[in-house]
Image 1 (cartoon, rainbow, N blue to C red):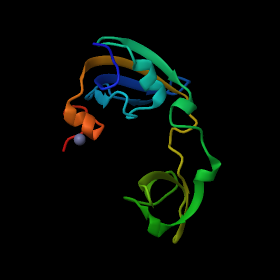
Image 2: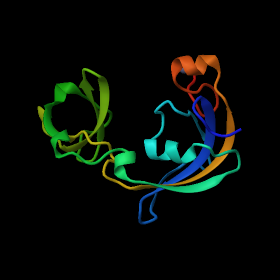
Image 3: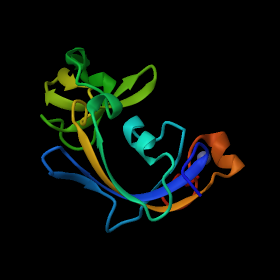
Image 4: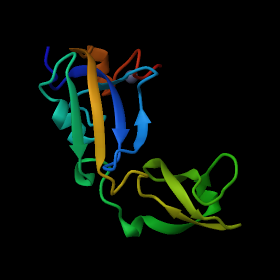
Length: 160
Ligand code: ZN
């Protein structure tokens, strides 16, 4: 079957930047499974996978606007440490979670301080053109329960 809305798609991927530097890969581990049409992966990749089928391999170049968005200067800000949750040492380059009214949001520490911390709430891959090497390993219909939840259950998906 072909990838369409309400398909569960399982795939291996390697993510590189535009210069060919590898940033992430599922190869050597479990493939990723997602519910197509549910905003579970970046829009540019989801669009490219539509209509594909098991065994297809493709290289997809996704511009920032269809990936993790452009970098926004206004997402760099100074916040109180009491709004942050982190593990280990709070240092430049470390990841932390900012408590927001929409739930925790991952941020990057720019400059730590005792009471106030400069952070960057841009997604680490914002502003980056993404190059995905993809191999589709399975396509199936989503279960009613998965459609209810808006995500995939079982291998490569959510467990609960
Ligand atoms: Zn669920």
